[in-house]
Image 1 (cartoon, rainbow, N blue to C red):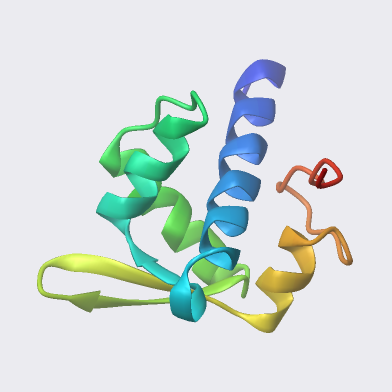
Image 2: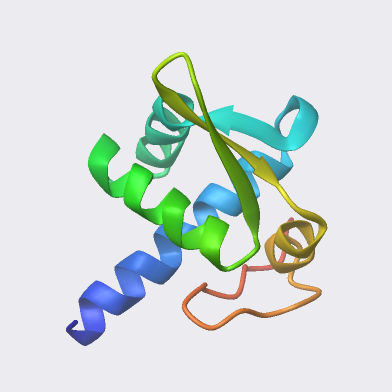
Length: 99
């Protein structure tokens, strides 16, 4: 993967984690996450979101399950720590400080 592709993927992952952190129950399906990341000008497809959810699940940052034909992701405590910048995880961009 090229440097810019790695940077884009790392930014996508932290954006997904931060979106989940701000949602009720710290959970959302792939459709909502797709709309959310696009609001931050990260033009990811639903397939790309689904692939990153699988990666985040394998990394222990979210748990995911199939619900009604969609993947539902729920942030883990480790995912909260990474989203808040308390912890780091390789492949996930460190978040910028919140204003």
